[in-house]
Length: 260
Image (tube, rainbow, N blue to C red; front, side, top):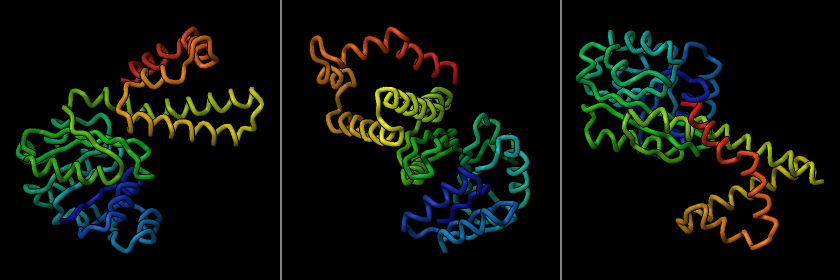
């Protein structure tokens, strides 16, 4: 199987590194207009072939991943489509705001192609992304499974309907920034309580790891785990009530809604 990635920026580079680390038998080609990022990828893994020509990289690809800026998608896809037979190639875009219909319109007979949108978050760089995948009606079950396997290698992925993509992006792509903001706020609170900043951040990160592990291990609703740590008249319930009085839950919900 050959996978071609167009674009070696943060997202394209992270995808290439993740795939190169799989240890599976695949041909991996990456195209980028400038050399420095390509050199870094070659140094990372000898499995990665690099090109400055998009057409050369895409030729013969079973899966074509478009990891360029949204405003470049049309130009890049039309360039490749004019020179490469994409009739049996899975087209995967990771560009925000470019629809399945848009992608089809950028190709000759695009309505016959198997087209996907994949929306990772920045944790793809450490292979811990939550990636959402949607596809058009031409994609077979086998092709959907292949695309999902690629992104599962870099965290977790979920196949959803295109109409859900905006909400999913707000929840997990924007949401990773919201989680970082909580870490920052909790760290600053720790400093105010008398803990050094670098220690407070480490303590908060481990607390979050523990919360995630608990929820995954038990399958419980978060409120059930909250009930386990809140005792009558205790300090935890006082802290939770103070946060709610200052709009914690509503702030999170409104932030997500504003990000759509």
